[in-house]
Image 1: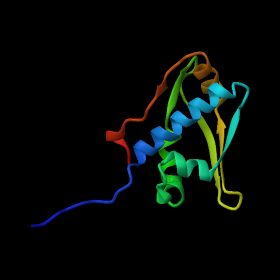
Image 2: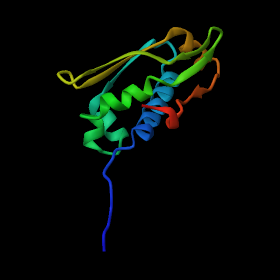
Image 3: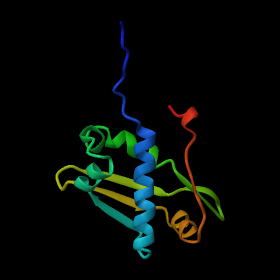
Length: 118
């Protein structure tokens, strides 16, 4: 009997989780133009998947920063910049102001196409 299995993290699932977490954060903090999350919170968000909250977090954020919002100027990325600071155990996210305004006005988040991702 040969059992084939894979222990590949689902980057798109974790990117979706972080985007929903950001969306909730924006609803609770409507005046924020950036967010700082403790990496311990990210660890809990990812259901204690240590690899995804540490080593794989940059790959997950590379997908998360492809999520867009419809704006007057066309679809724009929600995340303009992010920084993982291991020394301070934090994840800093700066938001695109046009996309943030559209999200606050009820525009839906547009997920990247997982079938065309490199």
